[in-house]
Image (cartoon, rainbow, N blue to C red; front, side, top):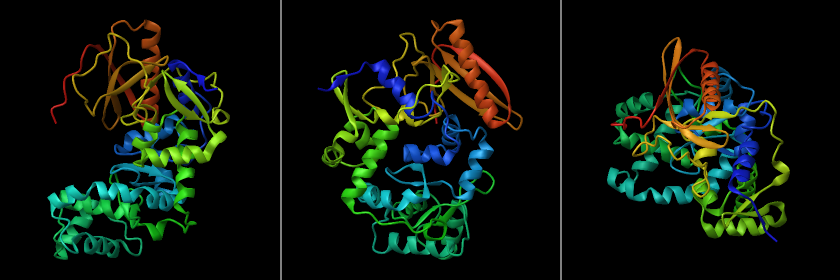
Length: 373
């Protein structure tokens, strides 16, 4: 018999599973291992996502792990950035990249990248420019390719070339230089790893996802992994009793109850979730409920993210960073109690601590102005 769980219980389980309300993991790399791949489109926001779940409490500490090669930032799972452990890079790419690359064929035609030899020659040239651990930024690579007479110059064509090189497992991130991302050859910065057969890789990826993100649905996994519903159902059938199936609002969810830590007495009651945080982005089916007077923007704005208090979506926040301070502006539901407003301010103070800056805090109500970018 399948157990029914109410929405609030599922959301509490996810917070504990992802180490947001349970004891933090020692390192950022261990958080990435738990979640398998962590969306890193907004790199600095992703660093804070890792800090929220680990004892790496500052930006500098998380960056140090990336620069040391304990984690890699690259395009994987979907045509967007993710953070992944080096030992997981090759087998996940081999499993998921074929569908991702196939889905990009139309865009490559529009950009003229489907012309004979353009992508293959470009990837080869990029590899040669990086060989010998010559870590280079995108701007550096664009300038070098232009010098070599490549048809792939700076701009969107270069971005897609580098994306393909990453999805093929040729390049990935190197150490940061200043605030800039660099590229490196995978074979020079990632140790050799065992190749997996597709069925083994599929089952392992599903196990890892539902263990680190559960309770979650088939739809949650297919969105996250770019794999098919048929693949997902086959993996779940193979996993059998290794995962527990429950129902939430009539929707089947899977998770590993043995992998859910107990809530920590020191857990915060409010969070400023970074843009694209895994606990917000992953679940299109069952997400955090919003207060009825929540100050929704009329459309998605990438500079405003979710404020969570006591398991409810209570508002939006954004930050502006200067050399010495971080300004945090929150837009909260008018009905929010004074105690919960205090917990939100404490969440902003934790963000300031992560950035090692003073906090300037502004609390407003109502709808933020629309992003016009």
